[in-house]
Image (cartoon, rainbow, N blue to C red):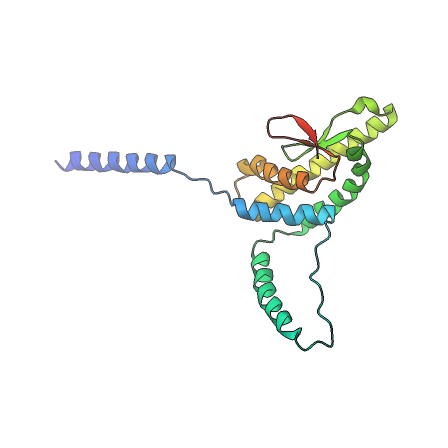
Length: 197
């Protein structure tokens, strides 16, 4: 009787172990990734932030609105700091991507390049470039895409996201790259088609 009880107990633990392995839930912090993408891409593309209008300096009635603005802005600033994603590697990648973005801008503007739905730059019309320019732009696109891939991996590491989720992080970043693209730049829709922004 004791032997059969131990056997049933062992089987029970085995079943429990297998069930617990099957129900592993992979955490993906979508809001944190979206906020990181917004901040990082905004820094790279240097989107100018809107400044609130300043109150006249001699106006005593202007003090109350300033106090109210302070009370509203300070908690938001602390909330934003909670999800900021940054480390030395991310800062270096942002710096390189900002320099590269300036070099790519003319090629985005004339439709040679496009912002892919997967978070990477796509060379759409290499035939419109001279052989020398085609080689240079191809190398630049490869370099930018390698830096973007490294950036997505660093964001995953900073947010403690499973590396298998990096393509998902890239798609979240793709939305931000496309959102900050200038009018006339080519962007890829989720169905794979291309359109001008």
